[in-house]
Length: 154
Image (cartoon, rainbow, N blue to C red; front, top):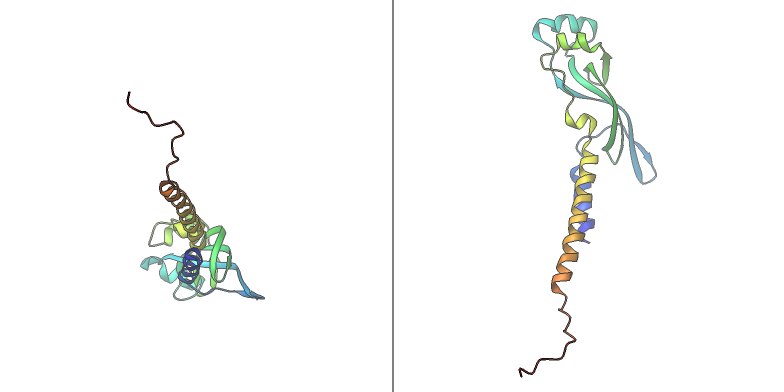
C-alpha cells in the first residue's frame, strides 16, 4: 500500500507543465513538438533576429515528445531553434551560436525527461524496499536448532 501512495505522489508531483494532450478514455496521451527555453538573443543581434522572426524571440531547444498524464517519458529529435510562444524557426546551428547570448548546450531534461527520471527513481525505491525487506525477514527468522546432542562434559 505504501508503494501505491508513493507512485500516486510521484505522478502528482511530476505534473510540471500542461502540454498538448489528447484524451483516450481514462488515459491522457501527450505527443507532438515542444520548445524549452535556454536563453536570450544577444542585444546587438536582437533587431536582426526579430526582423526575420517576431518580436520577443528567444533561443530554445525543440524536441518531439511522448507522455502520459502531462508527464513526458520520451523525448527525441532535439534541435536548437529561435522561438516565440508556440512558433519556432529552425536556424543553422552556427548562425544561432552567433546570435545566442548563452552557449548552445542542451539541458539534461531535453533528452532525459522528468517522467523517465521519476520512473527510474520509483524502480530503484521498489528494488531497495524488496531487498531490505528480505534482509529484515532473514534477520528476524529464528536460528535453526542444532541437531547434535548436547555434550555432557566428561
